[in-house]
Image (cartoon, rainbow, N blue to C red):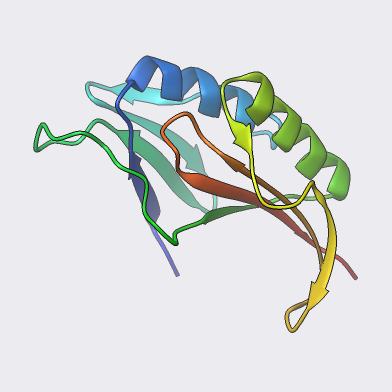
Length: 125
């Protein structure tokens, strides 16, 4: 459905360090740097982080979450631990199994250094 997702940052170097560690737990190669942006290229899409081109500060969306597919609960836990160890903050409930209308899922939530809400999600059988 999506070709790419781009979010803002106020510190590109800090964002690169954070996302290199975070996405590295999922096998995503380190970001390609393009001036004021960084890109994570995967076969299923592109995730990018950019300093705002209008010169205004980057802000986190209220009510927004970016979800990353995790291949297992262990990958989601590693993702969460890497995020917290590299400047992210845990949010929501601790990582774990949740059941609802979408079925049984393993979820791990955190906020990046700029306050963007992120989730690692593994759909369980």
